Image (tube, rainbow, N blue to C red):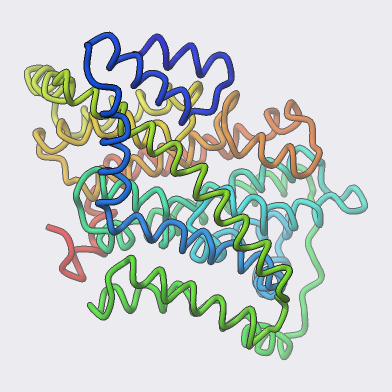
Length: 424
């Protein structure tokens, strides 16, 4: 099974198809009914009510991209941090931090605010194209941590933990990551004499904030209805989609029927792509569970008498090494289910473990030579991938520092969900 999967990945097959092929190979080798592929896929996809939240959050991101919300958010970010040296790079981080609270997807952030700010940065050769693209890639990594986070929904299904607790646990690491990236930009900007932006008049900041307030309210609305018990995360996703539709069609009137149709079409295509990967992962995980691999791995690592911290450090090394060759969704759906029972057996808090996994995914998304965001930003901006590789190491180092801090200081990650009574 592993050989077929790796062969498919090396030949460039989509990861979902590579996993499905590996699953069929396993069933053939063990003389089991190939119909189990359909059985595992249907049970996995249709018995998880929480999965309905994923296309809804994708629709929110696509609708926000089409409705002109980004311009309002960028204007606010520029008014707040554009005045500092390297101002547009700071705007990139802040805009992505805010927008990730609406999209739940790193790729959506890269294609939205990341692309717009990268073009602003390279206009009139004010910043090197490689630095602008690397900043956009690094900024987009904030998406998996800020609620609503699609990878966190996947992890909640895998580990059987509260989505609400995960969303809360991601807030502090997300803010810490954004602050750390902005500090790195400040150092680089001073060393390379990057420009600052002309600040707006103080009296103009109020109107700019008011124009951006309706979309800014979306993450707060989402979290409020989840933590108040008014709605489940899936129902909250539907409410968020309805709110985004209301903003786009009624408040801003920036989306006509053609743009709405495009947003719906993009949502269907992106959901189908994710569904294919999930189908392959369900079959792959069936084979792994059927061979008792999680139990064997759990027993082996517990026999090594690893401390929770030592285990987390080993997980960091493993996930970062895998990120060089395998995409993050595959890691999350295939590798992480093997590690969750071990983490539970060693007494690691599974909410904390989920945040550590997300931080590894963040770094992996921008980690050469395979980081997905590097290629997404390269394709969108037309920047040579080599130029981005040269500029991204300081950002990777910054993200790894945040990862180590979250690994070694679980109380910092868990204090917010504990404050709301959603974690122990």
